[in-house]
Image (spheres, rainbow, N blue to C red):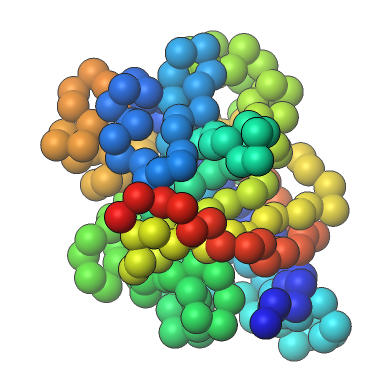
Length: 243
């Protein structure tokens, strides 16, 4: 049974992005995925998203729910029916919502782990800290809006970075069954990102030297989205990942 379209508002979304040696990244991906490369680098990152008014599209907005969420993502591509497709592989999702934790992966795509979020923000400055209840994931990011694009990013301009991440709307999430990936597509009513200058960023996953040896991964750039009406559309599972 397919789920109804879910509709809501992206109140705030931070995309923290790292560039990675694709040879280091490739073994961390399940089949059929391979790293999608930009100028010889793979791209991984954290999506920190606060959703509001989220509900089935046939319900009014006042019945929607809110939540803070984090996703560890990798930009990927794969071959399907003779065509190369692109999107993101989500290795882990964390949320402060018990509804998402209990229903995710069961009533709607995407298994979630419960976590605590500490969010401090103003119109110009943002700070998010998260730690999962199982202590498997911890992260923090602090930064502020800037009119300048990072000169060290693999993307030469904000416009190119924006187009790259807008194209990664199709996401496949890990499940307890290694051969099954759950699909979910994000459709935004409009797309707009602003550059975020990061003052501090920490991630126990991306700082794990056993996965990412020293010199194989570097912070690249960060983007901010606010007040974006959107929909989530369930997609068919991808069931060809290697166990």
